[in-house]
Length: 364
Image (cartoon, rainbow, N blue to C red):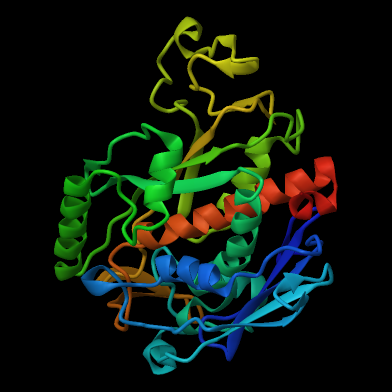
């Protein structure tokens, strides 16, 4: 089960960056969920590289669903998605198969798989495999929306520049989900894009911080200890390549505050329980409290850069120099945000299915 995530709704990922195809199998989906190919393609478009701030590798990402769907609805049986790899240039990796690219999983992958791994383009470790996760996420995001649950992510910080905070969660989420470069402040969006372009010209890369909000989520999801909402979401988010950290609510910003400042006071408003602030990010004791779930994801700079670097040949145990060629992103944070949304949808849908039953997402 090393490539499978979930308890009630299970997602199994397969494929390699330069193999024939990549894909996912989803088991446990409720029957009757809508399969909206236009929406799936929209979500996949948010992940695609664009302009000067993305890799020159352009895959069409034409998905093929080969099981689990009939007449535009899920059947309840395993749903299988396949995406062909067409724009591969494997020759770029011939001279790298014994070199440990700094920041990559070449060395650790060689240890784990005893040299039998597909090293081309990072193989099974590649961010290329997030494409089928976005396709799966699109199905779940649409189902969650029909239950009043919405997910949105923006680039909170990149290149020393910070976007504004969420103001109106629903309006901001609706805006973000139609932006290729998910920044709420137009001027900061322009400045961040220019910073990434400057970094690309220098042969380097940058990372940043994503902020995600999930609204409409009911209270009561998660367990007090090992399956807390935070731990399950962190498990999923840390499976995304380039993720190096996650924190919930204002925990990092207010780390030096007092309890009297950090605590969220409860109150009744229009017959509903709410908190006056949301410093804890909508979670208490590992369980959602009904307020917006808010979390931040730290995305490291893309490890593939064009500058000369020190490394090793892990076959003959020699120190050497490395200058990577090929097609690489100067930043992936803008492409990663839809992957974060997709993983979040998988965690939320799985917890809803566990608490309310598998048919919850398709019930009226």
